[in-house]
Image: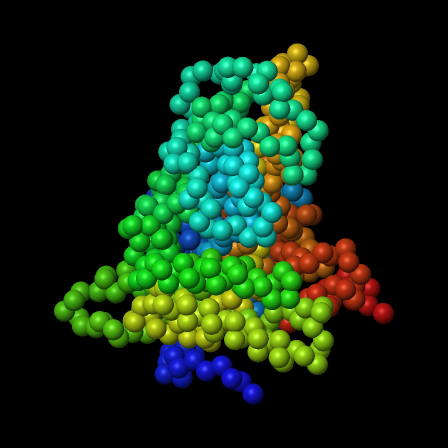
Length: 530
């Protein structure tokens, strides 16, 4: 028996049903977006730009989205077997870039925030090589690295001098006044590293200690959050403003936050990060995505409402205008959605006879966190968004459509550069870098890792013999999804990727794909089936 009851689900049943309906494909008036607007604002508002087409058909929506991404060699089409699919509209050769897609929403993994300081909007590494290394060592010294999670408040302990650093400020290439003081700290590398003196770690973070040849790897300066929190940092003012306008103004815990209740917001985050089910299943995996989707929709709704003349009486305080809410919700409506507690895979340690109880436990967890979320960023006019049905579908969409977010660390490139120096220069440089490398340990260079939802990439269907894959090239240094051709793809051919490890035996592949709700019938599976 279902013991979870959400009053909002009952009161707004019709509105919720409308929001969860697939986008209409009937003829409708399309509002065009001028080429100049795309050129001027595609970088500033990459996650919002497609919202300028309030009444367009699904096909035109994706056509415009492809245009803003600059990937005119693709076409999103409906196909009877799998719903949407992405098709080549030009010929691609092996190794060609097929798609670069900006995320709709996504986040860096909590534990990864210990190792990497990145832009909270585009996920580029920021600061300097010294800041990246010093910050990681500083957090290791605090003992944070031993935990499975990164407390969001940990970032507040980082000295404020790490913000607003310009990596090109210093004219002096010297790296330390007394290299022998560093050399004495050297020892054999280990997984956990050999600690450096506290003053050296702090001098790395503040920029007072400059490592040899680090200027060969310049990074964007660290820009602080517009709201004054110590949790979000950016690579540019453009990213800071875009994140504030699209998401962060409701999610900030700083002095200028627009959150209805900052204490409730912190309580929600603490609850989500502290709840673990069946080993590694964390609600924290979805928290940032949930917050971004809900805050994005609320903020977009407010902008749409403000665009109507007051004398039209379109909206009144406290009353939801479904047409505006549907418009604000449109980017989310394009993703395939199913309730989280229905689509989540059954853990290995849960017997099939206990499946119903497990799924009810997941639903109860979602309901508890929903109440905390409602207290943190509730908006009366967007009340249907705070229904359990919508909440479950948002997490379910992310569960089924997410892609790994990976950005290579410049710290690895830096140490490889040192290792490739001529012997005399290398020996001199290593008098300083070797103790630092020893302190970092075996995991001296960890890439930025996270999860995100990409509106175009998520339309790509699976094949166990795919013709494309997500692959970061040397020049790809941000969080965009990069899809590269594995072999030649002819115009009109569907572009497919693999959702799983396609080298697994057929039976294992089919078992994993069952979590996505389908049985693969690609040519490889048909040939390998017993």
